[in-house]
Structure formats: C-alpha cells, structure tokens
Image (cartoon, rainbow, N blue to C red):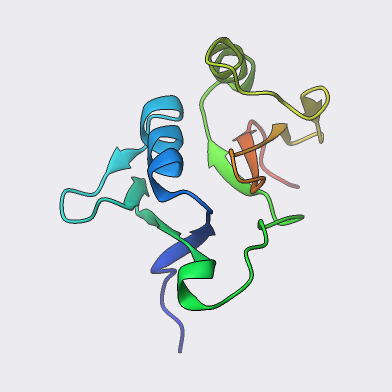
Length: 119
C-alpha cells in the first residue's frame, strides 16, 4: 500500500533561518521550485511553521533524522567549524557511527554512517 516516503516535515519558528542552516551549513540541495524544501538524495525536507497553521511549535525530538555521510568524524569536524554543537561524543554501535546534534529550532538530527551490515 505505501510505496515511499514523500517528504519529512521539519518544524521551525523561522523559515529563513532554517533555510540558511539546511542549505548553507549542512549543504542540502535547495529545491528549485520551493524556497523551503531541500533534498537529501531522494528525500525531501519540507520546512514549515506550525504556528502559522494555528498549531503549537514543538521541535521534533527522539527520532533523529539520520543524515548519511561517508565519514562521520570528518563531517562532524566540518560542521563544528561552522558552529554546530554536537550532543556528546560520536558513538559506535558495532555497525555504524553516529553523531547527534540539533538544528537551530531544536530538531534532533544525526550524522550517520553504516560501516558494516548487520549479521
């Protein structure tokens, strides 16, 4: 019945600030037809302001969006150089490396690289 994920909605209180973070800091590809949509491979990030829809703003938490990178340590160092603060050390699960951080609105994100298939 469900065939794919069309987009991930990322709540914000300031769409322009979020656009700058996702495009300039993280380097996501801007959608040429939308100021507030960005692409990670085949997945669209849609920035939206819940308060403009009459809803309370709450950052997305405890469901870290896993952003694939080839080298977590190198990507982390680059983002730290741009002022991104990470939540603790990078950790190794035995099959992948993960480094947790937040966007300017407090939404949970993660740099991720699976280096070994699960047995």
